[in-house]
Length: 346
Image 1 (tube, rainbow, N blue to C red):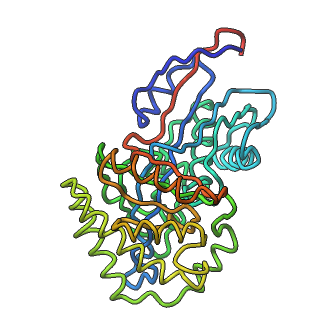
Image 2 (tube, helix red, strand yellow):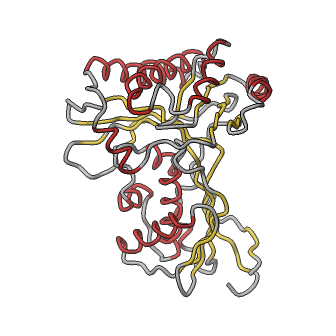
């Protein structure tokens, strides 16, 4: 098979149009990574718990290619999790598992970039498209058990941008509702700081840590909500990088202190913490760790700032082979879905 790319749907939301391309039976889905900037209310004393703010990234991303096959196979990075996602989606939606999955690229696992959610959504969406089902990412995410605490990953897959969700309603299994979506300014940049020697908490360890955190005071929840709704989002709408960075940095400082006992400090990686301290000494304010880390980030106001900071960081930390840096844009388009026309028999 020699697939030639023939993009069918120009947006990531028009899944119905994609389903009409029945003659094309190979689908490729590119699902963006995201930064999770933290929860607003871990106590939930008003009836909703969590509430999240997050940023979609233009890279890195998970890319999967799928086509019908006699039996379920998967190759590439994170192939095992791809198989599990296909089987779970097939059981829930009554579909067969006869697909070939090629994971062309995968987000680094347990790094704070949403690797599990984006791979699961991409694979399950591909299975539904090949099976002729018209479902939304929210429906698919709920079936996979994604959105248990946050809808940032679902929002990143659906439409991208900077996303605010409204938290998990007590007694409900539905993913939290998305309350706001704003584009990330084109001129801003995000410095990503990776530590390839570490992984963040996940699975049972994450659930245990979440349930054993200190009490999240109502006053802290109120302050976090004000920072998100009254400072960060208005600053974003006005493209004011200073106020946006200040709000994000303060939210991250407060959450880092709250999580410190569970993750060994404000940052899970001591190497990333050292980079963050260095960036702070240079006057940067929009610093933090995505989810449980270890990936750290810094909000920057221009491409020039990004080029300068990443060059200096690579020089300063050249002796730390586990540290890696990237300077990326925000992603404002969500997942990309393409049908590939087969030149030869598929």
